[in-house]
Length: 173
Image (cartoon, rainbow, N blue to C red; front, top):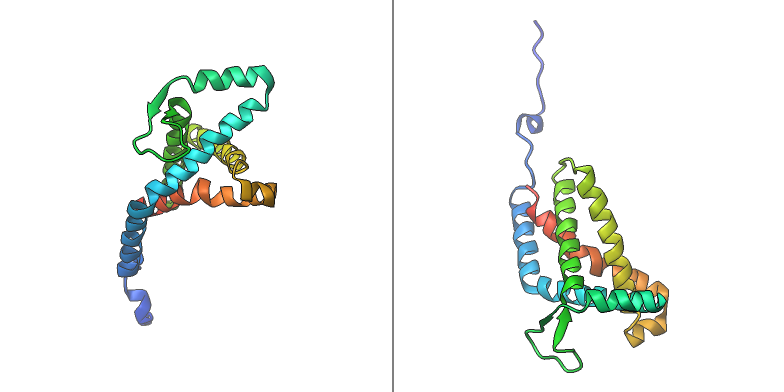
């Protein structure tokens, strides 16, 4: 019977990041707590504005659609100069839905768990909606509009996906 030795590093169980990963997750949660709401509100605001811009581009049918989805409103809790005192409820429900679906898919993917096909398809479709409406909403900012569509397309990526991906990572086990 031959005796074989194994290297010392293979005798230890694999660590999942240890303290460094724990510190990173705490940092992610602190980032979400301190900047997440603002980041999410900015993205959501551009998405809601973008939906209105897109709807207005589709003649009277688009205008009718926008009138219907923006008829139910909620009051804005903080008064900001130039901001209407209310916001349309249904588009904001879409913003919340997109964020929840993106977080769920990110969390499952980063945890190496399977993603049910209906969840994945819905998340992909609403993420496309969220991204496109954010792109069009960014076009209403004068300095971004001056730079043009490439700037809108680029800026919309982190606005649409980074916060949700960070939350998905922080939830990962």
